[in-house]
Length: 459
Image (cartoon, rainbow, N blue to C red):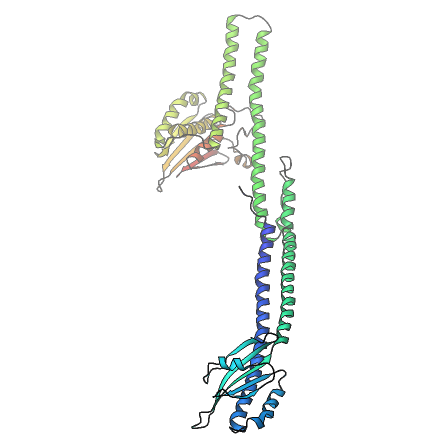
């Protein structure tokens, strides 16, 4: 896959393209303006000469007095440096012509007509001129007298000036483009300095330094959202890393106890000869530890599958009331042993995986029976909500759970009692939360001085 162009190069190219467009446009506009200025100036001069010739031909001269008034045409051209004039009558007879250049061929090209006054650039091979060819007609009544004139002014100076100006102008344009592009590159590099600083800070982050955070107040406003989002991501990563670290430590702790117990019992058993009944007793004791370890491993595997969305669940109608009564039958003997009563109210059903939902209810019920004092009652309340959802409350009397523990009850291997003497491995509530989330539900826990309640809602 081709690597994308760097931001610095991309922005520098954009600066360069913008400079080319802007400077070229201004350069063309300036050059065109000067050309237009010279053209207007020359045309104005040509029109003045043509007007003077018109006046001279039809007001001051008689038809047969051309030769004697040659001086008048010279006087007209005298005030215009380098101007030339060529005048012919309707019969093609030359009325007046300047010595140089020869404009006779231009009068032959004139299309004639009162509105015909074309201006063109013309060269005699050595010099360049701007030429006006025009047909002049008498405005006297019944007069059909007409003349064709060609007036020329030299433009060599203008062309030389434009050549020099064009060279200087476009040299400045190219220099401006180069300087602007270079300046843009430097500006982009400086503008990316905060990004380089962020990268430098991020590069220092490691598993041992997840506490590093970016300061949104020290970066440009455009990058403040990035810094905030990155800090929030680090918070989530740090929390997950700490949970994973604690989880690993808890696994080691939970597995060390039964493994140590098995090793001790085996060493004691082998320390002397024993009869068959004694060996059986030791093996039965070991089986209990193996079962505990197998259950722990099974729970850990279930949680790992739930975290990665690998739990395959059925989507069937589940009668929650029936499942609760089945669990009551299962725990009836244990509840009677602890002198705990079981109560269920309401009726509800939902759609989901029956075995997974039964496991969640089983864990909550076992947890409630375990922490209910003698003579207490574990109550389960089922309600079919008007929205089509389901509400489940599992409540048991007992000591209040401190607020700092409530938020961590669903953490794996977490126990409120630091001595870790409660039954189970501390994975039951974590499994309940995973099952509820797998069914797009929500679970909350509240605790007061007299009871603790787990509240579950399914959509």
